[in-house]
Length: 338
Image (cartoon, rainbow, N blue to C red; front, side, top):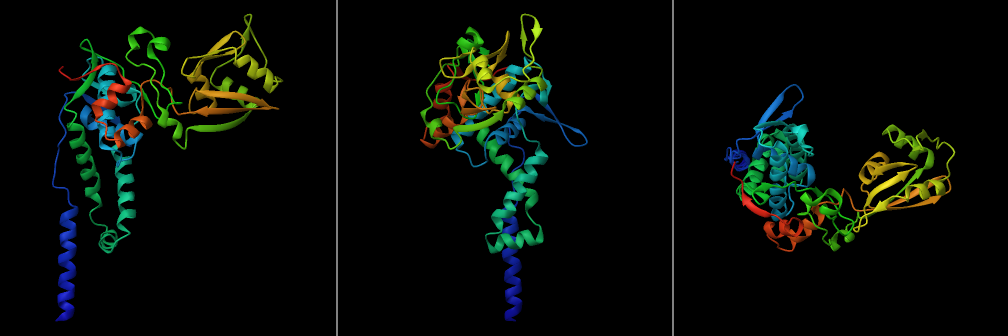
């Protein structure tokens, strides 16, 4: 009898655990009337813009990020998408130029994380062993994100009733860039602001040593060829110091990012140069050491708009998502009506 009671008790506990792991909520996102088309393995998935926002959020930051950071970035993503769509009702995800994870990718990621978490307790080990509850993980987390995003009430960033393009990046070099100076007066809502906490991030300063031959090869691969007086210049035997002197004839902005670098008579945009060489940002110094050049980069990304790292710090300090947005964008936070 005692053994039977133990067995019955075991199954009762197991059933309770299963019930508790089942997500009881269904669709909780607010429909926007705009459709994003996502490429899947063997098909194409259509989803509402509000359903797509979590896919971008999770490509940029972990699920357990501060709530006010997630809300602020949700507003930025929503505004960015609507600005890019230009009034269209449907768009391919790739046209948006935003990083995102597909539902399949998130499902696999979250299920793997859940299995690892459950392995720390007896009930979790039982669920893992019986392969139960994993199907609910994706729905539960997505609905939590929907509920959080709903708290922004469909708000976007506008100036004089017009949507703006709110750029963002992972980590500034300690100061964001002035949009008006580099991109034109229409982007003056992105001003240069100090982000001192970014300089404390472990990934703030990175050194990369690249051989001169490899630099030339990478630039050529990205169709960055040197011309001088209308003729192509062969850089095969150029020395490191000479290459640095040539590149440094370009200019940096007041925040310390390269506007452009120079190769002969050719001007190369700072971020294009960084991308070609695999550098995380165009905020860098360079120094020749023999046949190599050492690049010291600071930050991660183009430097315009919101620094996600600084925004995270503000959220951890208790700042409301509206306060975070006000720091990086001189625009009104309003409910989108369209």
